[in-house]
Length: 547
Image (cartoon, rainbow, N blue to C red; front, side, top):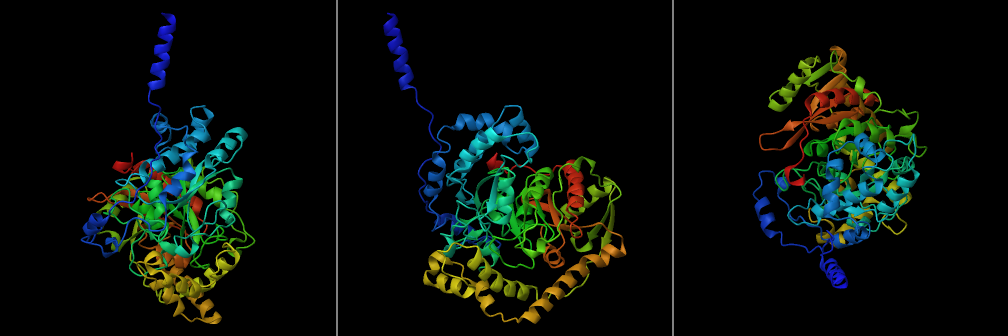
């Protein structure tokens, strides 16, 4: 009898269904109905020509993940969810310290979540271009080597915009011509790695950082397809060009993400995804190993769900790079996160732009700052002449892209100039440029000699500074308040840092950001005033279908 019972138990155990993997084969779907619906969108830029990438095989993505989460199932995901979803880095680190979590399980959770949503045709946001095939193995090593005094970014999964060179993953800038661009690490990637961060993968973007086509949608690239906004896929713009970094942050695909900006490319997607985005002073971060637009105005920057994570990531990315003269003598080794609790708004002086007061959300948040003791002064926008801003970008791109392709791209990339890329794209326009390459062609039409180029840099910078300093000096202001990326061009020209923070949602549910602008290298002041505002308002809400 005993043997019979034992046999029955073994039989029941054998018949018990084993946990199923989340990874199923991705099958491209018919998107014609979705495109027909978007053809009626009120915004021309939201009238997509395609959504799914013609060049990225999602099954290759899942192949890089499958063995990493082979022992991680839905039950694990749900059990760990309260410990990870929307939690800031200090909270995650405390869970590690308490033994509730490991870096291995943390990394697996994010990879599982990416597959869970991005492998579902009804939820996919097209936010990811590549994933680190060694992320979990690296996280396991972090569990073994963890020690007192580690940087807070240690063991934390980070997603990088796919114009930032990263060894072991291709860096495409979303462009067909760079689909096989295998590189070493960018300077900022090395800074993250030396502090122990886990580079989880690379995010989609507006191709060539939004300098490819004219009138094309934000968030589209030939490699990644059309990035969609988690708060309203196909309804709301993602902003650009760090679209995938914004969407990935909103959907909790990693603890934090990194974007890049020339003029609005961190501020725009951060505000559209209800994130905290910081566009730092030009020169705070190195640009070496990042696919460029403009060595005059480009900068990487942190995109996060809260201020403290932004401060931690900001510190982790900084450093002086001998290959980037703009970083010489920049501020270094600042623990931006340590003094946030000392933050206050009381007594701080803010410029309120009169032309934005018709925006009820902006006005309501200005009133919140006043209620917190902030001093606000309504200012008129200073008239300045930024004519030539586009010429500067085109002239820079012509030189800077050549420098990247010759010195930082894979040796297998035989195209070494804008002319080469334009010619390459014409060979297969359907795969490489369904929206054309109007901006690239515009670069070829720009002829600016060295003297005129330098004069243009000085003029644009002078006019940008004038826009802010005229009212700031007249009224003794510390900050200027803006909306989303509405003043990004002026801030780019002036090289002034900007911090956008969720300020709520429009009546239709679209996120919006209140943007604080300060003088060069005032990042610590921005983070402190931003922290006080964030703690008092707590505006960010998870997108409802990604909870």
